[in-house]
Length: 287
Image: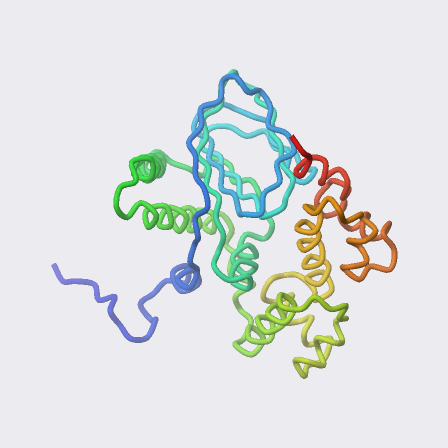
């Protein structure tokens, strides 16, 4: 039997999924295998990382950013950073495997999340061979076996492939040409490093492009307008500022260049389902 040659300089022998995913690198922050039979409810969870949660046994009613899902065995949840979520157990116990991670590079992470078109719940996704792989990777991680981090990264890649197979239009966002990709990436870079009150036009002046072109670029690549990304950047910064008990909500809104604290609070609640004070009391209250 002849070998099938994969070592071709061009990517003519690579499938579209591999071509799309090969650039992404995953940074693991935490993992856990839980079998809950005492805690009946997980409330108001908000984390700065991407979360993948797979249900092995049991059922729960999961609420993510106001959407409720009745989930059971073999279901997978993909929860982007800073999305408020909670779970109410339906059965007496619930067994899950969970991974918290980031995709290296803000631009790459935004692109990666865009691949799934905001889908949060993947029903009956995990088959028995995949459960065996999950168990194997988590067992190695618990034992600190050499190479266990690579194993978890491979697991994320495998789950990503399975999620993408659920949607034949997964790669619509990757059809932007190289110039559009470059412009969107430069915009995110400028946005990330700036603490100034810059408008979309200010960024366009820096990048020497028109507003309409910049909007086409960001919508094609990460499905968000430049203005939406500016708001998102401000609100993510506000989470760090809220950790400082000496700063009032008004002072934080001023640092973020909002004209009115009420408008800042309105955008904050629309994004995180909590007011700034509710978030501060929940996550930064003193013991």
